[in-house]
Every structure is written in C-alpha cells, then in structure tokens.
Image (cartoon, rainbow, N blue to C red; front, side):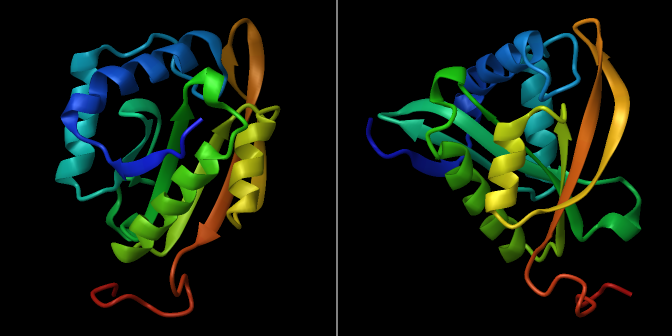
Length: 178
C-alpha cells in the first residue's frame, strides 16, 4: 500500500466522505447518528465548517479518499471559541494501519496554527479501542466517561471524553480572549 496523502478536503471529496460516514452510521458505534445523512446534508455540514474557518482533511491513496478528519466548534457559546471538537472516520478496510494517527497529527497542527487552545474528543462507545488508542498516542488525556448515554443497535453505549492542550493551552490568555 502506498503512503497516504493528507490534504485539505474539497467538495469533490464529499461523495467519498458521505460513503465512509454512512458505513459508520449503519454499522458502527463511533457515531450516535441513527440515519446516515445524505450528500446534501454532508455538503451543508462541510460548508458550515469551511465558513467557520475550521480544518477539514482527507487521507487519500492513489487519489482515492480512504478517511477524513475535521475539527468544529466544541460548543456554540463564545467562551468556548478557543476549544474545538474533533471527528475522524476511516474506511473499514483501512483501520489499524496508522492512517488515523496521521490524520489526527495533521489535524492537531492545523488547529494549533489557527490559534485554538484545547481539543476535545467525544468518542462514541467506550469499547472503541482504536479511537481511544489513536487519541492517546497523540497525547490526549482521559477526562471521563459518560455511561449509558446513547442507545443504538438495541444497547446502551457510553461516550468517552478525552482532551489535549494545543499550543500554549491554558498557560496564557490568547489575544482578544478577554
């Protein structure tokens, strides 16, 4: 397998991104969505993140999109403006090959370059060892687990909260951060 190219996502990538996410919704517990969004909805979400200045990346091998990652607002209130939440999804056949780690490392750098100070991961399903492992390898710390907050596939699921400081983190107040 060739080395993946990690690059900024473009609208032409959205059919592939939609397909990857559809599989995660239908068969996985990393997301608590129950009905896969269509291409129009995924395009709306993509554009909202682009308009907000957030990073959205894809991993591609030989021109084929095999995974994606993005950061978006953690919460809508202005006090959270220096904190982002990440999402990362891969084609099932590509799991456990280090591509999620490459995407996450690049996403962390992109967020730090944009002046964000904290990144929060809300990981669906406490049994999601792959995602927890990738976040741990990148330096995320375990914040806690919300037990039994989601119901999918007829069973209760936890969410795992992890967090990492970006740049100077909370050691200083960013310019304009009063």
